[in-house]
Each structure stands twice: as structure tokens, then as C-alpha cells.
Image (cartoon, rainbow, N blue to C red; front, side, top):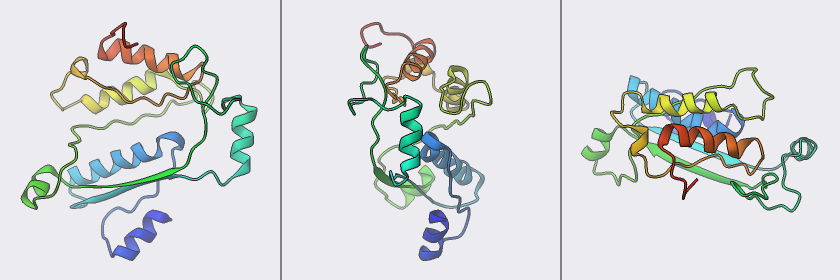
Length: 184
């Protein structure tokens, strides 16, 4: 409902979509906003995401699933990685088509060339990473951009600090973005 309350308060028209896809909610919302801009469903988009640790049941579920680091420290890509730590935060960005932002003399912090999303299906448990699904989403983001994944200098990863998540991400990143043994 938060998306709808913002639309109501600001008297905005166009898609107003609350998104809940667990860890990927904000990026899924970004993807949907980019698609809405490209199809002309809206002239600008407000994309936001937040994480509030309000439900004890979530903490219990993550603890029972051995997903949380016992010492409270997330150590992604480390030999001692044993889970993640929970944090809270919020972010909001405004998106516009590039030509409109130039015309309006907006300050441009970045340009989104492509987005991609995917679901893992029923191959693994809900919280388990599936390399092919992650890789397909990333490669979809490159379709139509004219860019080669091997030319990328930096990749931001989920980096959960778990025995299942970190190797999965490292392997598909190395396969598709070029492997640098000093960095991986």
C-alpha cells in the first residue's frame, strides 16, 4: 500500500505498484519502473525500497535456517563466511527518460541501459540461490544495450556470506564477466 499512498499524496498518475520479491524487491521495482518509462506508461517514476526488521518470526525463520551469522558479522566471499547480518534502511530514486532529463537540466547520477529479472522456479528452496536463474537475469539486462558483459569493471552482488550464495555468485560472474584471479 505504500506505493499507492505516495501516489495519492503526490496526486500521481500511472502505475503504482507495491513489490515484494524478498531480497530483490527494490531491483524488481526498478525493473518495472524502467519498463513503464520505456512503454510510455509514465513520464517519470519514483522507485523506493526499505527494510525494517519488525517481525520476530522472520528472525526465527532465518536463525532456524542457519542463514544468520552467529557472531552477527557478514563476511561475504571469506573462508569464514557463515551467514548474513540483518540491517535496516531505505532508499528512493527518481527515474526519467534520458532525453527528458537533459531537456529539463536535471542532475543525472547515472544512466540505466538495461534491466533483467528472473525467478528460480522450484529447483531449490525459496532462499537458495540458483546460478542459472541469476545469470539469466543479469544477461537479460545486457540484451539490446550494445554492451558486452566482459567489459564491465564492477559488479555489485547479493553477497550473503553464506556457503551456498557466495560461490554461486562468484562462479556465474566469473563465467560471464571474465575471471580475474586476483579479484575473485
